[in-house]
Length: 582
Image: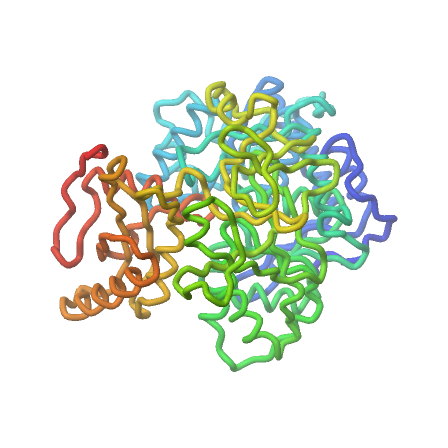
């Protein structure tokens, strides 16, 4: 009978203090823990102990050394399966640099996926591409202009076996992780052995998640994204911790299975963007009982933390033993390997409601008072303290270090920071300040010793001297819209005082009368909430473009709008291409 791997290690716990991933796996292979893979209904499909992972990775490495030179990049389709984990670690033993690649379903169709893959292949200069046999045709088609061997996972065993391996050393590269592309085309973030080890130690430590002997991870996060790859494949291995996996597509169809696996295996650590918790609330049916009392760290990352859906999740699952205090808002990005800051255990949602009218005038996050108008109040969530042995600063646009409650650019420094983007010197130079700190591109402020993230600098709408956050507009629209509406996206076009603010709102109807009602209701709500003229356009489902991690890509939606590729449901026609500077 196939059983999941144990929570108990069977060996003393070592918290990430290894020179390389190989050293971490060699020790984990002496333990009883490993990876488990579950079906959409929560049934165990297969388990993979760390010993089995090590043995199979070493055997695959003997096959891979013959097809690529040391240091070559190898693209690997990041399916949630034992094969991906085996091939990723095989690259570590073979001296190759794995580049986890997203899957077609996440990128909005075959044509879009092939273009995305071509861009990654161009920048990554792959020596080979590995994927399941079922994906061989689409990947071969995407790379028909590239002289890159396309090899199925199943075919690796048929390659000639070489005697000598080339295991990575402490100063070598570890992987290339493609950024999610929320503001631009994906760039290959370089992870080295030392940066990955440093971030794993930070996450594992008391200043991070404080991993202990009883911890067990549960994850549905995609393995091509830093939260899934680093947070729920590499870091657990580096602390000999068992992980229970649910495929992201299965989570989308049956999100309650995620909670069921936490219950069944007494999971203690699991993360999701806000929308994952929201999806569970929407799909819950009161025809079962759950026990979520083992869940001690319910992490939130990958996007802006929204308090309302999280409070709704707490209220709904309180009878199941879930408490708000286990929520762990965090901040991170691929360029920092993964984790930058974590809230202390037991803190939960530390809310800070500020006066947005004052912020828009002064750039300061001043607490709202009794005389602050309701429409001027905005609640942010603290994302915790910086991980040990790293530093975080909020800086002005002139580079000055700012004090508490002054909004500025978030800059990060420490041993987890990437050396840059692969084969992209221009982007690498732009990512760092003159004194060598990583400019994250995010804006935020200090609340005591915790960082509060307010949004991306590139997304900020500057209108007649005001700083307007696009997510404020989007959330106001979604709160006012009926259930037939989906994602919203706001951005500006034009320049200077001639700038126009656009809001696209997806609707699941083409009934003219209903569209008129939606337009009137939402327009009225955002006019009261935002206090600025906003052009609302109702668009069909699937208009929005999301990144590989599920984030809304405002930059790409804006480009789509400007190119005339967006349909106005009320006009029943595409919007004509717009002059970007007009």
